[in-house]
Length: 370
Image 1 (spheres, rainbow, N blue to C red):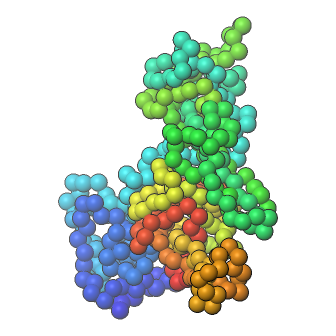
Image 2 (cartoon, helix red, strand yellow):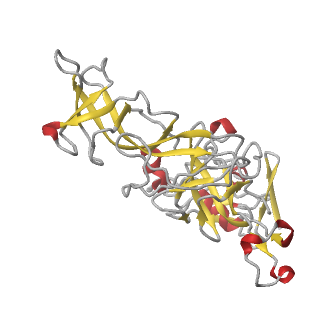
Image 3 (cartoon, rainbow, N blue to C red):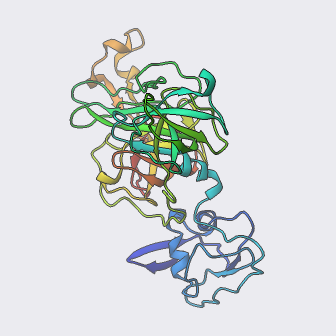
């Protein structure tokens, strides 16, 4: 066993690691660390063992990385004919970085009242009419977003853990049928019932072409980009030039959470289950000390199994008390790295795993053993 010590951490190398590794196309730093470290989320340890690497996100296919701490060979420049590798596969999260956000409320946000020629849907090059942008000036650009989910958590002591869909209709009001989005809403246990936020999905962008004029109560915008079709009720927010990070440095959470507080709320484009490279919504955010790069392990909660040896097979499990049940251990599923953080909710990418992650899974320290 071999250890690289940096920042007070110890990254244990696998026993059969080579002295050097040549970076290949398609690698990520997480993948490289997964081949040689016992804890792949500690890939910055490899970076620190190679002091010639000034920026770990500027390593190129063909570069040689030293894995020998006591006999460093340094980094040899590659051909520099391809894009540098990254800590995580940005292509898998780029759409979510650009298109998803969470706000505390949608009340008071400008919204689409009608569309050109009274159409039911609007697309690139067409006009949309918006209420709530009274001071907008021609040339200003806005993102058109759709409220799709309402995230809430519920006190565990007041009720059982509850997980259910809570999709939003065109008005941003709750309903339970929306086949355009396959995200699940959830109630998570905590001290009191609380709104975690509304998820907004970016559809496209539009530019103000005409402000308020006499006798007209809406502002006119022209859709200036391809994207999803717009409908009445969609909201508008100012365009942000760079609302997200492109570099991620994985690290453990800065604090521990009461069991049940940190959970998976939803799996992107799925009902309940997700796997490697899937995006998941988490019930913790910036107020909980979560930032981009925070790594969790995902765990299936152990069952409270009926002890049939003790009570026999004829008794219904619904009539069996805790004294005749055995609490089984939680089961590890995979690692998740946060790539975008909001106040009460964050989004993470499933980096690796041995079984599917699921809505309701507990989030723990990446090195948790139970």
